[in-house]
Structures are given as C-alpha cells and as structure tokens.
Length: 67
Image (cartoon, rainbow, N blue to C red; front, side):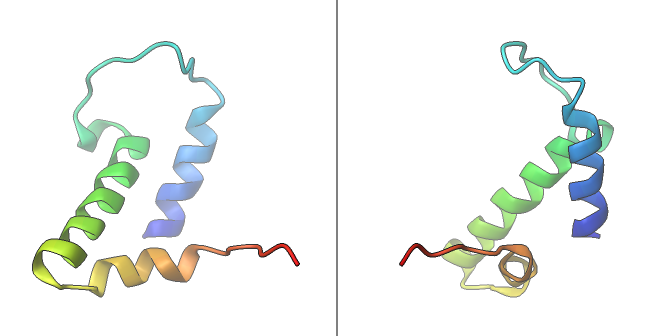
C-alpha cells in the first residue's frame, strides 16, 4: 500500500506549484493520504506506544551515512 501511495505522489508532484496551497480532503489526494499516514503513524507510536504503522514506514526508509 505504501509503495502505491509513494508512486502516486511522485507522479502527481510534477504538476504542483509549491507556492500554491489549497485545502483538500485526504481521500481526494494521494499526497495528502501519504502525509496523513505518516503523521498518524508517528502519533500512534508516541501517544499510544503502538509501532505497527511506523514499522511500515521504517522499512521504506534508507538513510545514507557519511564516513
């Protein structure tokens, strides 16, 4: 699911003007759905000590370290 959302966001961002902001409902915009998922996952981890959603995100993140 997360992979599909990320692909949809990447495809949709090419047509965005970052200076233009408008209110939308998350069900109508894949980028907003992704942001909602991430923020909800962080909230669940720190407010309810529930890591099941943040684990999905952590599996998708690759952090490069400088040596």
